[in-house]
Length: 369
Image (cartoon, rainbow, N blue to C red):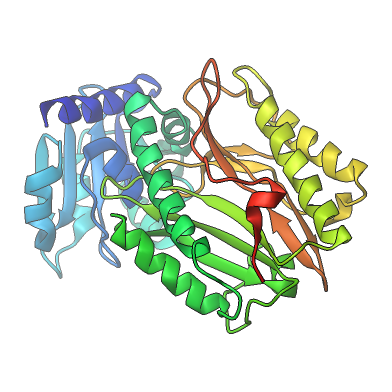
């Protein structure tokens, strides 16, 4: 516990070393967890971590009903509980009474809550620190890597459970429910995404909805899902299966996406501009004549959240750094025919580390009809 307490305090110190402000008010629950080890879902109530940038003193303002959770997990210097009906913002103002400048998460604070802050501060005293928080959360260490591997292992065990049995004749919803039950049986506390199960023509919808469509011979079966572990780390993986012997076009599309996936992974090196991963994958798909059907970025960061920094899109020229955790997930989505996405998770190191081990060659993903 002492080691973990130190880890959270070091994260606070790294953040404050990046800022020239008096106080930071962090309200997004995953960010609060990142800096304190305490996870609370406040729903409509206000949750706020207050960090004194000059002293690194920390205070957690939280609904009083969560007191025991805070006692057990929060690595903060001060507790500021409040009861329903009390004005939580008065606690913030009182604790930050000497602060002349505030940092907030610009993309999370709602308009109404920003208006409350304007009761005590002018607009030019309030600054977004979202970029600095995203930068910190984007870099993972060896402990993070181990916990992310646990999330991937659970995901892959559940998927292996699925394909060890016939899937033809099952509906998308039935498969999704099966995977949800299996990840929990293997130790997950929840899913991070989906399970998104799309078969036949539905697989051409990059973010469709699992429904009552039945898996049949000749279908693509796209499965995109991940888990949340007890330590709140997440995974995200996609495999696309072919039910029965692939047609010539199915084989061409699948192998095009596989080559794109492998090209993106080869580019995932320390110091490589992030857009070159997207370029490398997209070039493979364009060369095969499917460029118009690849409609999203090559990947994104993840860790405690499903979508974190960095964004591996065609415009991002920032360079990959040691500690980044990313997905590489090219896809081809042909309306009226079907789609393929292949998604792996990587840890950027001197030699890139690939979390996902589930087979993706066409023979391995071809299932009996």
